[in-house]
Image (cartoon, rainbow, N blue to C red; front, top):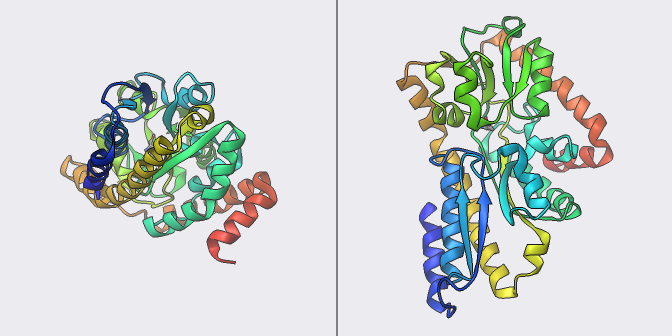
Length: 324
Ligand code: PCA
């Protein structure tokens, strides 16, 4: 699947007549590690657009929050400081609850369900972004979320007072409901936060634990499979509107390929990441019955709270996803 993007670029290139290097350069800030599959996928997307447009648009990816930090990318693209960028969708939950639907505990816990939730929520996400002067290009999930901790966790009682790294408002709330103490930290700053004791625990995928060599700091990962949050790549609407039909077609084609390739990569790597955690000495296990029941209770509370905030639109989205 990931070779499709290069094949796409090559096939469009054959009919492209534009001279290379004559066009505009787009900086594309991304928040996660250069080697992470989201970033690699973004680089292939960038390369496909650059090649297929014959250089009319050259996209240059900046990984690891090096151009704008994760928390700044959405605003940077909205205000036109960067034409295009990537952000964890659910980190925008304070802007609108609809951004948070893919971080609701136990709503969609497999790749298949996450895909259905994505299809059900895409029109609303597109409309929401349009109202903010942005256009959605593609979205790709993280593997299922599990609990990292220094010590063994049998129930959420064991999480009381633990310094918990959060990546959005939902994970802060989850920490609060467990009696843990949340601190928001971007993935790029994780190793330092764990090394200095600012964070001792977090909920995240095997992917982020692997990227940050989390085994140097924590020993346990519970495969809770709580949700699969997504990253999205989006473009400033004015930049988009300034493209002619040929260039828009190429960007959309490459985006569609990147979405398919990204979902396939996430799923392909999901088990591999778990194996890497084990290979590096971590204890990887499903949550015990008590911990699972505790999480389910917290999940139910968070879903109720979300429905209260998201109103009729939120409810109709959940109903559409559940096929009601
Ligand atoms: N990794 C990202 C978000 C979800 C995930 O699996 C992070 O921890 O920042």
